[in-house]
Every structure is written in C-alpha cells, then in structure tokens.
Picture (tube, protein in one colour):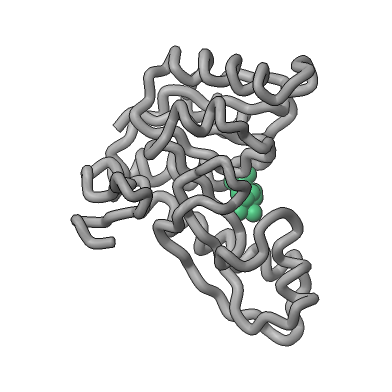
Length: 203
Ligand code: GRF
C-alpha cells in the first residue's frame, strides 16, 4: 500500500510506521514524508530511512485553501492510496479533505468525542478523567470530528502530570496506528457510503 505521511514535529508515529514496515509487519511503501515545518525532527527520521521528504511552509500562503491546493499537488505527485496525518498540526479545509475522502486518516490523543482540540493530556487531568487515550479516525472537515475507527485506552494515575500521561498515550499510539494502517493495506477497512467505518464488513 502506497502511503504519504504528513508531519509537523517529532514524528514518533512516523517512526512507528517505519519500524513496523522494516520488520515486515506493515505492507506499506512510504512514498514521501511532507512537513509544514522545516525543523520537524520527523524529517530527519525519514531521511535516515531513505524516504523522500518535502517541506511546504504554510506561512508562505495567504489562505488555507491555497496551502491545501499546493499540498494536494505535492501529495498527488506520490500518488498514494492512503494519506496519514501523524502529528500534523494544520487545520485542513474541505478542499483537501474532500479530495482524499475515505483515504485520509488522523490520530488524535484523546478518547474522541472527548477532548477535541489541543492540550488534551493537561485537559484530561484538569477534568479529573480516570481514563484517557488516543483515537484514529477518518478525517472530515470537522476538526477532530471524523468517524472513529479505533481507540486505545490508558489509565490516568493519581500522580500523573501531562508529560507522563502523554508518554503513556504515545506508547499506545505507536501500537494502534500501524495496526489500523495494516487493516487498510489488507483491504479490510473502509469508510462506507454512509460515512461509517467498516472493518471486515462490520460497522
Ligand atoms: C501526539 O500526541 C499525537 O497524538 C499527535 O501529535 C503528537 C506528536 O505526534 N497527533 P508525533 O510524535 O509527531 O507522531
């Protein structure tokens, strides 16, 4: 399965894909890694793995739609079957989301629909949540609002701070995201006509 991965930062989820692929546990070809941030450490991870990288700085565009149109051109040069947002920190407009309908995934560090948006770990603690986690969903125009495919749960422990909670969630992200991408590669996962994720035909 040919994929393109979009990043903005550390790229630990990208690294999980690279490691799983190199262990022959994930039948994907990462055709390119695209970042909106030239300093993203994930670009270094891609280079070390011999994966093509591109930077598209969102600050050079006046409108989100123009950035999205340029991003579509870059992505489509790699002709991926699946586009993966992994720590990508730009809000995408319907221009891009509709173009990749049903083949654009994102991972969000919360148990959606709880805690959409940023700083989810600190907010989980502030809310006194006893459970937290990560969600993988198809991307729609609604921020962190697309249909959820799979979730991983972790306990919130009494002496947790945002950093150690985030670290516990990341461990689960790195297990869950490659598993969901494998389902897609195995043609087991799809977004049906009603916009509901189906795994092996089951909603
Ligand atoms: C993680 O919290 C992830 O849930 C979110 O971005 C953060 C960094 O991800 N998508 P990564 O290390 O850049 O993959």
